[in-house]
Amino acid sequence: MSNNITSLINFKAKFWFTDVLKISFPRLTPTKRSPKPPILMTDDSVKWMSTIVEKTYRFDTEYLLIAHTYIKLSDFKILTSSDVLDVLTLSNSAVFDSDGNDIPIDILLQRIPNVTSVNYHRPSNCPREIITNSTMINLTNQNSLRYFNIKDFALSPTFDIQLICTFIKKNAAKKLDSSKASFFFNLIYHSWEQKNQFTQAIKEMLQEWTSKETKPNVYIT
Image 1 (cartoon, rainbow, N blue to C red):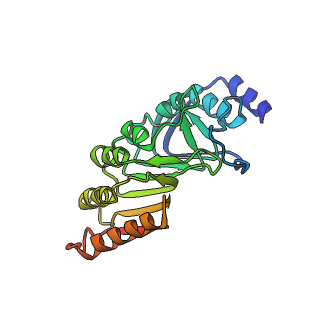
Image 2: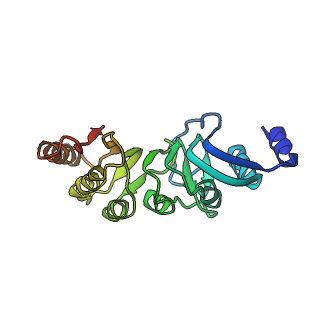
């Protein structure tokens, strides 16, 4: 891969990406989950990502998919700089700053308030990001999402389940097109009791939903 990076660095022209941009690397090798992110800025995929950013004149993408890599925050800011970006997928990927600190999902989405569809599946060998009350409040206040899918996140032991209901209600109520809003939560729970409370709260919310047109699809695992 290093030879290909050299070829890309030596490429004289600049890229201008529009519409759909998909950047996918060989699947990250599963390893034991560690307390520190295995980001290693020497990783080839990270080098590739930075080189792509450096060689790009402009991003006008509506759909951005990044798979199987760790992304430097500085690169993420540029990759998501398109004014028309609507769909973001981070598959088996995560974003870190230059010191290796994990960037929380609400901080990432704060930078791209116009995005309406988010898929975020974190690497299995990364420290799990904890969804706190503050995380959910921020997501509710700053984004209007019609599709939201997160995987391998953990709920805080003191998480208020009703905050997710508020998040769903707020986003489902804003119809941007004829489709229904969809929410997928593949989470790690602090206890079986917490998972049961979550499931019950979602069930009751959907039972009480009055408008068939805005009633969302909600999936819990």
